[in-house]
Image 1 (cartoon, helix red, strand yellow):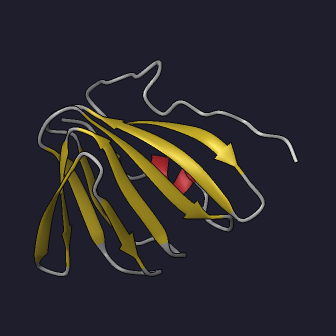
Image 2 (image 1 turned 90 degrees about the vertical axis):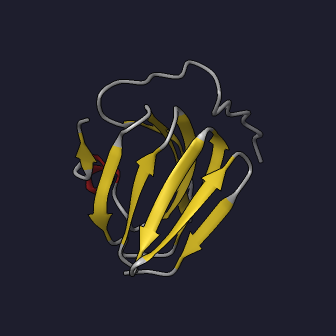
Length: 115
């Protein structure tokens, strides 16, 4: 087994829409880094499989089914498949998103909405 170190906090890029980078594409899941500038939005959507969202830097509001929570550094949120949710960055934020293997990065790219 080979070990690979991934740095989610190196070479960060922020712009008028969230920036997505695939960090690892493993046998069971995909690790994705999302950099969101203050005010960036990811419109309401559903994932076909379970996901986890971990905030590494900043502050992000996540809405789901008329409920809203604010994640701060180190917080993690888990969603089962097909749960509607949206994200908005209150300040520059770095997110670690874990998708199931059958989900696509293109689906995530299609959610991006400029300021």
